[in-house]
Amino acid sequence: MILAIDTALAATSACLLAPGQTVPVAAETLFMVAGHAEALLPLVDRVVARVPGGFAAVTRVAVTIGPGSFTGIRIGVAAARAFGLACRVPVVGVSTLAALAAPAIAVGARPPIVAAIDARHGNVFVQSFGSRGETLMGPALLSATEAARALGQGPLRLIGSGGPAVARAAFALGVTADTEGFHALPDIDFVARLGLLADPESAIARPLYLKAPDATPPRPSGLLAAPAAPAS
Image (cartoon, rainbow, N blue to C red; front, side, top):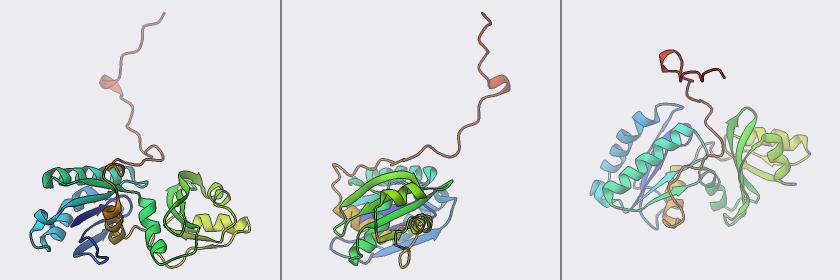
């Protein structure tokens, strides 16, 4: 049974899914923009407690690796690795963009299927997929207009929090785009399903950062500042 974890965006989620099934044995999602670190471990404990055998039933761990929140990704990946070590099971990484696109691919939506996440300041994390889940355009950080131009003539099937911005840019270019019908956040069920399909040798649980964090550490000042170089 796979334990799937997602803290990459505005939610903390976990589920347990048995191989060959599409409905989790147990699952929980808390929507939040901060506080993932405090929420994750109690949430996982609650989910695992609903399954006979508890952590002993876990045979694999999957975690969303980004793109997304710099802090959220680090929290999820660190926790997944810890659970993998404790349970002595493989840990796999699942792209947030692939998890967003997976429900549309599963119901046979017409390609290109485009996952787009709001990256702030008019930018989006974006990737497009074909009808079988193959990558048509690899993950990138682009402005909404750049993304609309790169995605081609459409019609585009847009999913995720960055979808509306790309749709507006696409309409301005005369390209048809649809943003209706799917969630703005990854479905933890599909994180688990993709995790079951992933190869542990290649789907490494390593953060996928497409940009530097928005916040940077303050420069040292006062007594902590580095001494000035002597004048020459």
